[in-house]
Image 1 (cartoon, rainbow, N blue to C red):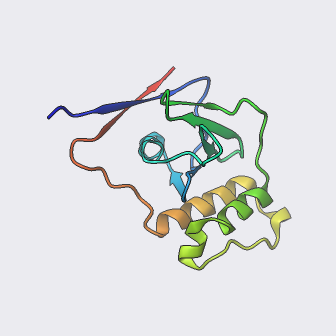
Image 2 (cartoon, rainbow, N blue to C red):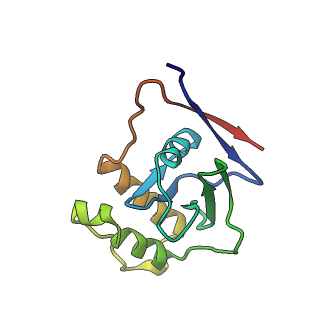
Length: 143
C-alpha cells in the first residue's frame, strides 16, 4: 500500500501565529506551520464556500483551497474585529461543547492578538488537537 502525501503551499505571505481555522463543524487552532497544516488537511469548508477561512493573530483572513492545497491571504480585504472573533467562538460548536463563552467585557482594553491567543488556548485546552494516523504525512512549501 502506497503512503499518500499532501502538500500545503503558502503563497504571498505567511499568517501570523497563532491562527484560528474555521472548519465546517468546528473551530481549530494552529500555533505554527505544522499544526496549521494538520488542521487544514483535516478540515472541511463550510457548505456555502469553496475555501476554509484562517484568521491570523493580526485579524487578517487567509483562505485555504483544499482543491489546490494552497493558503493565501483572502482576496477581499477582510480584517476581523475583536467582537467578530468573540462572536465566532461563542457561536461555535466548540463553545457549546465546553459550555463556555468568551467575555465581551472590557474589549477596548484588550488587544486583538490577545483575544485570538486566548481563543486558541481555549480550543487547545478542550482537546481539539489532531492525531495523525499511521502513514499520513504533510509536506509544507512556501512559495
